[in-house]
Image (cartoon, rainbow, N blue to C red; front, side, top):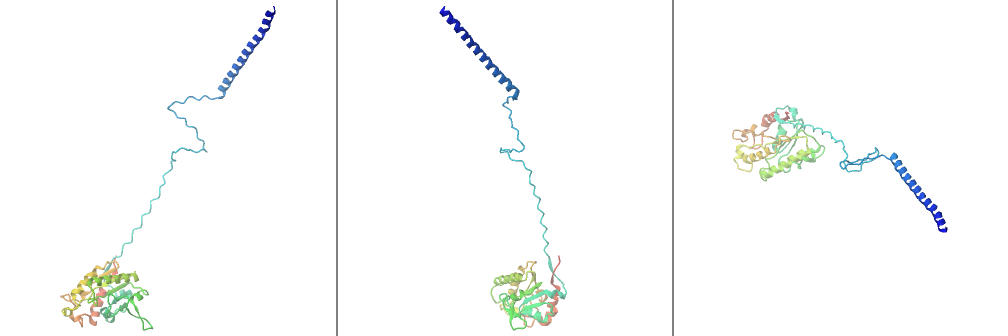
Length: 294
């Protein structure tokens, strides 16, 4: 009887334990179902992404792109440069007849031959810087020009820094025939021209030919002869660029058929007589003024 009572006492406890487990399991299952149900209502199902698709997250207006793709900008078009203005055409000059006022801005530079033009040529409008014995080596610096109110003289270099001329006529060469060679003469002559241009950049410079001597003087076979004169005249002509420097051959007006100075025109075979300076030289210069023609 005692053992049967014990069994009766243990059965209700076991039954309660089983019921408790069943109730706990049912409660747990209901919680899981509630979680699943709640999640399905609050979440949005995203379809799976295929291998061929790429999802690009949206970019807000205030966000920056951090990839390396260069920004596309409009090309900058610079304005085409304006064409350079056409250069002014260089003036063209020619020897043509002129009136005597042409000599208002003319300077003659020379030795005793040009000194004769100063004394007998009746060219009072022109300026003369002349001296007997003047040559290509001393022409710029020899003091030959009298100064007012004094016994002093100034050089051509000094005077050209004070005054302005439109045309400069240069004749030097007869005194150099016995000195140096034609090449050394022409080299120094070129230096003189360059200096004149530097001192008077606005001036046209006329290179005058060396006048021939008479056939009688030429026959003396001294260093003063027409062959030497012709050699140097040919070189003088090469110095002309017809822009700043111009060559004027004056021998045709004084030469005879033998290409020598006509004897009657000279008293010593070298220098012109006063009457022929006024009768021939002045008219020649008036007929061969250097003027702009285009």
